[in-house]
Image (cartoon, rainbow, N blue to C red; front, side):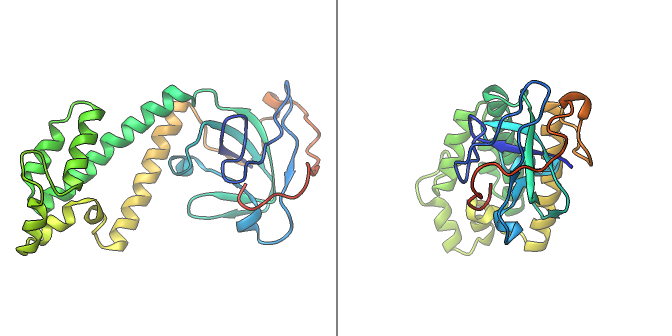
Length: 234
């Protein structure tokens, strides 16, 4: 099955420091084989399109996973994996653009919660921001209990006087919605962000098989161990 995997610079696994074998001209990289044992802990971890927003790193690769697969909420896990080709559209520039888009989207979500709390001044301050530096400063001020134009401690004083909405307006309270609603909303948001990111990078939805036309015959699909067994979560 085709999937995606974020790696650090040089095709290095971000959690373990393991270097992945690189593909050659017209051929995939060598297979890496997970050690026997708990697949969820020690297997090859990869992304579906909707998982991409949760695992960003310096490089994005199209990879092939062997069956059977373990499908979890945020990733795919297999016993074997190999690199097929790097997604060149994901680079430092697109990563910065995506980070900026996430920051502006976070502003939208925060202002929704502030609106339910009736904190109009904080909403106006956030919506007046026109660049990321201003947005960061404004969000920091609100999170520090001092909205722009208010004395320090003003939000804390409102909470002490019984304004429960004020408590829910700050970062800890942004996630104050009921867990079931929050979880469902996060899932929908993850799918939307994944679709947007994949669209921007021209990523296709991974599926069964691999692009043999692009990668050639390679090593004929043989699963060949490479080096010693992994440490967990590669």
